[in-house]
Length: 79
Image 1 (cartoon, rainbow, N blue to C red):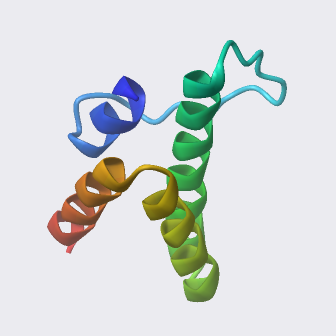
Image 2 (image 1 turned 180 degrees about the vertical axis):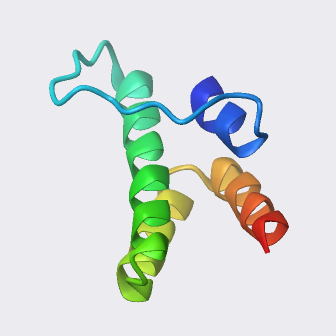
């Protein structure tokens, strides 16, 4: 989850993932899913797709509550 937390703490840059990703285990799958949810929620906000953004945020909250809390703090800082 370092990439997702690093992105939210502005210590890492956004990276785009390749279409095919080899999944090593359940934790790796969860990490990839969380990162894709973060990307999707941000893209939806930029495109003014509020319902989609909320839907993706809810999925993130259910999958990784601690990461969601960090994401929510990050959103508040973005203004």
